[in-house]
Length: 228
Image (cartoon, rainbow, N blue to C red; front, side, top):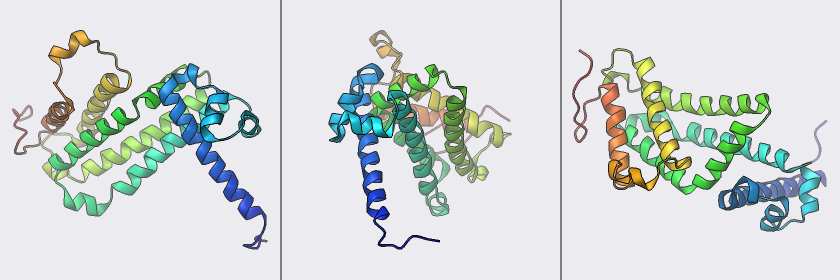
């Protein structure tokens, strides 16, 4: 039997959800600033306006909190992708226009949340739970597939002989390049002369790479056809 809408449980549930939201936001902010080691429960609790005891009443330890933060972050990203990639959007943009938007928005998000994403990547890769790593992978793959399927709605603009193989591979190359350069920050300053001089140029070069692999001809992105 459903509870009446004026049940005292409803306000408590609303307060609990708001408390969890503030706690996860605080955890994301502290981890982004301090990294995994510096993100202590007292720091996170203080940022959220809670006591450490309130955090421990919800999560048994820091690992449990970070597991929730990881999965909530991945789910939120997947949900935003699903909401964004509508049929109306597909009608509005050509493949080259959308490819550039994908690269630019991904770079912007990575720059904005680099510290958090770096820490969560480290947390996931080093976590002893194979089940957690699998769950995180499944959410990321689902999000990735959404973008692949959206790009494939522009199949008529793709000249690669096997679009179903080419689109995910090309997207993966771009994603890995951005992850290495921005999130993991693996390139030292010694590499700077060989890299694009700024983010605008990086977006242009990665978009060119993506479109060239797909064999897509577009003004501003000339390429040499690799496939007869």
